[in-house]
Length: 433
Image 1 (cartoon, helix red, strand yellow):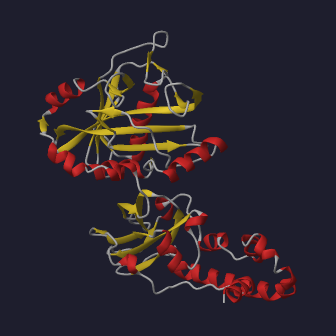
Image 2 (spheres, one colour; image 1 turned 180 degrees about the vertical axis):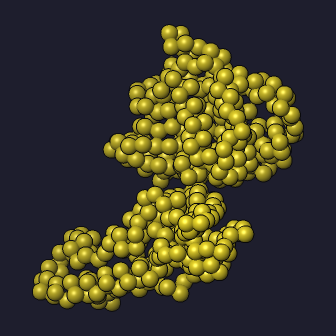
Image 3 (cartoon, helix red, strand yellow; image 1 turned 60 degrees about the vertical axis):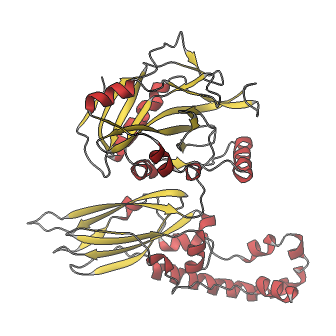
């Protein structure tokens, strides 16, 4: 039976998508306004495999189902680049998953070569592969969201093939009216924040609701907020609280979901520390490759490790910004106040202060990392207001302080305080001094 199954896999090319599978639409979040209503769902690896019949997640492709109802008085188009500037076309996504006899044979390793005498039947395999690939192309094109104007009162739905993300995925759905010579086109934008199943971020291990309930909230007006922020701890510590680490140079005012939404489209969450994530980190470390969701080491504030950790990685695991946030008891304008630390890794060095005997070397100009966060959120349009307040105190390049692993840093001593906006906006003020 097993031999027959193996032969069938070698000599035929089954392609069995399930276009009727639509469980993801039942709980798809929706948003609406006078001009449009939009529903959206991000498929996880299992859902996309069932709907499309191939392993899209392994190819770095994530289908996003979108349904648009046009309530305006003019045709409207979906601005797909707003969803993902690096999206895949339907045939491009299908092309990444095409069947190949050579790949399927080599996938069996040494066992596959036992069946070399069956190469005479290769033409049969080629024919079935070509037919399966054609069916795949047709299916992907049929499922795609077609970039045509949506008539007034009409609707359209389909899939946009986006770049795969884990954890929190932020999606901007922008609809643009066609307009006329006499009248400018209308436009509307909705921002969706979706949790992609199957990813265990380190902040998922934190019960932030219980933490908030255990704190005695300190409600602040503007003057009290400034005074309280200035009086916050100036640096992170180790687990025992016996040593000062990186400076606490960031304050963010907003809800937990607001933070994930504001940072989600531009920063990555970090995985919990496990055997699997440690192996992926080690492999990325040895190969100098990317690992977008690499865990970060714990630092401590208020007697606990960070509540949320985020990072932006570049060419390799050695080049990243990492940001840690802790929920404080402060409440300003009804929102929690988070204090945090951000720095930039620029390499790796030997140290006796870590069990692995290596540590990431940080850029000593920690103010640059702090200011990067401000500018990044300004670029995203998610800052309502920002200002710089007192923090760790000034130290110079010639007389730096050092973190827990001995890296030097210098700073103007201030921390950036950011009031997040729940949606894209123009900031009311950004006080640089």
